[in-house]
Length: 420
Image 1 (tube, rainbow, N blue to C red):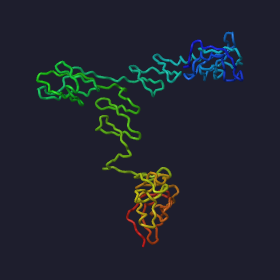
Image 2 (tube, helix red, strand yellow):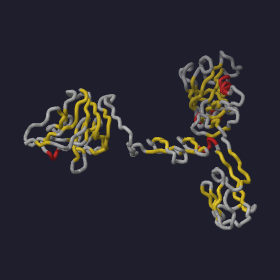
Image 3 (tube, rainbow, N blue to C red):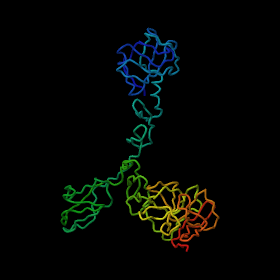
Image 4 (cartoon, helix red, strand yellow):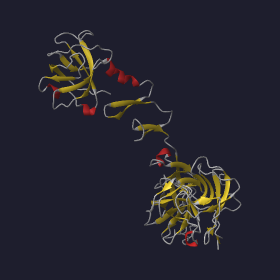
């Protein structure tokens, strides 16, 4: 909604340039202090010929977009609300006016029960009426800062006799339901007991510090149920149910929700990156044809690269524990176990490597069904070949089998042959 202020009136000292289209108007000295600061929002003014009633021919509606009351200069947008530009001259009257457009902002309320709320400084919005029995709740994420929601329901339990023997020796007594937090009231012979000093409480069990005497009367009051949507307190919370509605607090970024009947909410957040599964009577299915270039399907591991590497480079683990490019010239630089699974990995950077599975590189041109070996080249982009090394002391290690011209099943064999 536009800003407003009483007696915001002045006289033009310096007209805009050009007078019929310029956007800067200066009033007489000190008159700018009568007008609102646009830091709180824009507002509408009328500029008109002096000493005459306002008419369409001698007046123009403008929108003030910038003004500081410390000065007398106004930045305006011309020809507002269907008015025509006029040639502004020295001495014209300039004043804040309740124009038709200003009143239109109040017409956003269209239905019985609608609420007008401020969504930002100087900006108002309509919150449509809620459904029967909903209540108004604060919500900073909503446009208007408020929303309609369920009030929930609470059942009051009064005068329940907890189960347990009142025999001067038993101190533990059980109530029928789990109460809403901080609603349990325990009375012994009509006297309210104090938690910690007189008893403790866990779940549905009351444990007296001193066992009630034979013939003592124990009564409890409490509430069961929920405070409705109010149990959700943080962005990302989940509303779930045990014996009563429960809040599952939002998990850590990247964690996933999984079912777990051992949890009070029946759900929990887990880190899938570190989650383990027992594959008893289950299958571990690989994708035979990864959907695009430089993708893998299989078991991967994170390692540090010894040098700059690219997708498909085959590596062994060096004495520093890093993935280093193989070289079949010697057994010391073989024993390949992983393949670079990222497009590129820089030297000393951590990246993803394939241990076992299907790899796709559209630049490959394998003979389908043929065996693939490690090479003696020892450079990035040249660690695989369908021709086995043959020179003396070269090492023959099978890396896998071509399943397609641009795909291979990577399954490096640690049984290797040295050529003599």
